Image 1 (cartoon, helix red, strand yellow):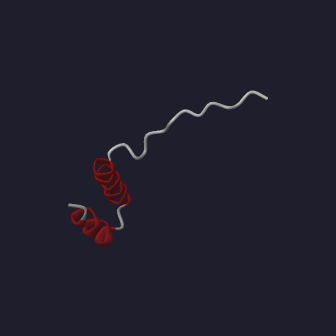
Image 2: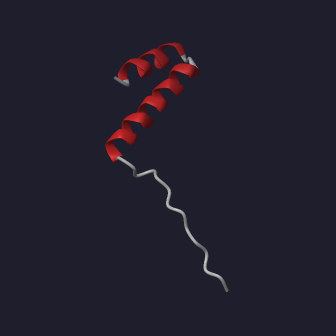
Length: 47
């Protein structure tokens, strides 16, 4: 599915198409990694 935005970007140089492609990649990676980007709060030790 990412091939179409890349093809359009490579032919037109339209930055919005490139940004759309990157957004689609992030969504695709986020779905397959299921929570790998979740942050965990860290407590600092009191000195």
